[in-house]
Image (tube, rainbow, N blue to C red; front, side, top):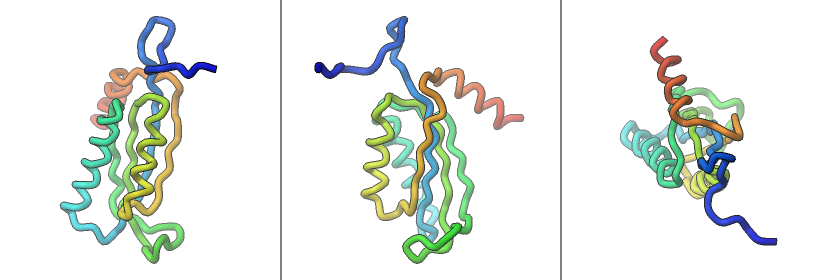
Length: 128
């Protein structure tokens, strides 16, 4: 069986992007500079994987339901983004290698997404 090369295309020839939401928890002992550096690193990583960051929601430092690596709390971050089907595996590989990430979880919200429409929707929601 032959593998399909290149990005998946829709009926009109446009590239199919999926809509994802990833929650990740950072170590609570990071200083403000390290925290911002990691936030930028993973947003840039999504972009470098040909993804589009739609919205970043920083919840701040919250208590964990149970201790993880002896930490009782962590910084919660939720990123909504669009990307090709393989973007999640690449991003989660980075998370596994980073000792500053305590936990992560990704959910696919939609198989077909229009990034521009989603950006408009989230900008309207945040201004309301």
